[in-house]
Length: 242
Image (cartoon, rainbow, N blue to C red; front, side, top):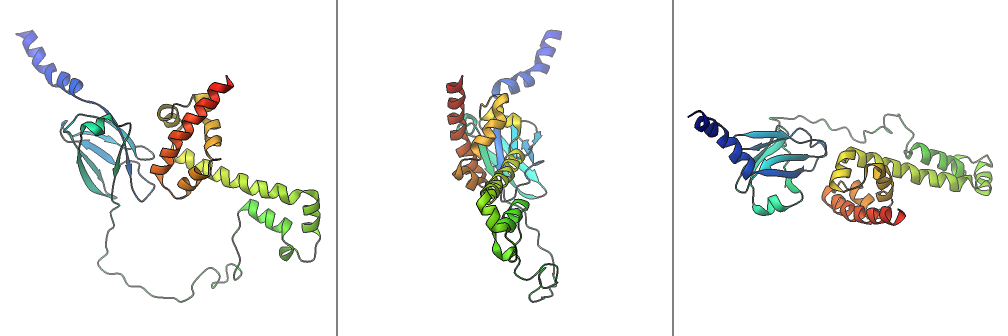
């Protein structure tokens, strides 16, 4: 009788373990902050996990399970898991950002109101990054009409060096975005990049123009697709170098 009672207690646990496997997924939306969204398996007794940075999640699921995606910032969405979902490397679920309407808003229109109109910056002034500002000062006669710096810099090669610095600055900003979207662990596990080559892989992919455009456009699906292909090529480079 004791053995029978113990078997009856363990039966739900055994059934859950045998019938479900970990489902890897990602939520996508029009905004970047996708962390902390609840993913609830209603079929498995409201089993709940939360998304991590980038919207990624892992939850035990089986064919026919109902997953509910819930957050105060998004419209709740419910999906039924299919065999194709379980067999896929990554299940992507698109969520609609929740727009809250106010009862009444009073707008006062101020024509031509800007930082220039307020006298905070000169009219028509372009905003430069630090590297762009040094390049503009070094190579533009209009920014230094009375000096010989632009001519000297051109002759000495400093202008060319500063142009390269601008490109490096852009790539560094792109690398920061990649490190924000993907953790080192994700790059190792999902793209099969050895731990000691992760940083080299990031340097490698920022050189790809299509990938750079996808990141700048916040097109996560295209960026991930391109990263899959670039990771294959990078692993081949590593293998050839050994």
